[in-house]
Structure formats: C-alpha cells, structure tokens
Length: 78
Image (cartoon, rainbow, N blue to C red; front, top):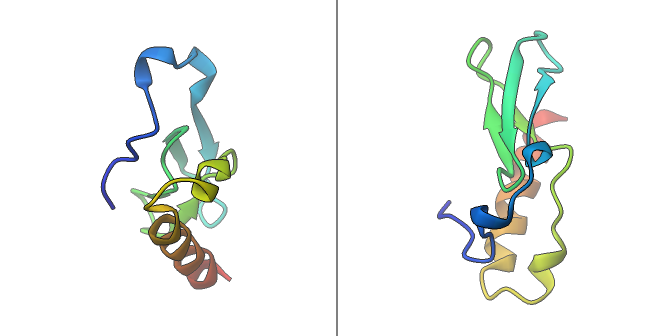
C-alpha cells in the first residue's frame, strides 16, 4: 500500500509512535500512527494497528483501497 497523502509527520507527537505485544507470540511490534498493520518479525502474523483512525477514509479518494486492505488483514487474523 502506498503512503497516505493525508498524513504529515511534521505534526506528529511522540505518542504517535508506539509499541504493542504481538497477540500471537508476545514479541514487541512498533507502530507508527499511520501503519494500518505490521508483520511480527518473530511469528510473521499480520497485526492491525489498535490506534488506527480511519476517519480520513470518508473523504480520501483512496479510502476504499485502505479499508479493503485493512479488512483483509483483519479477516486473516480471525
């Protein structure tokens, strides 16, 4: 997926980059606020960003593509 043009990293705050534990193996995964998902380096599971804000999908011309990609990852993790 290409980078979302609606994100401006110059306006980010320190809390916009965070880590969580992989729900499968517990390995630490770093997320940036605009990452829809990351792949765990230890178990290769795709993990959805728990803080992802998809409000931009309502107006962005690529919103349907983003939502389709994220929905696929979520379905694969069920």
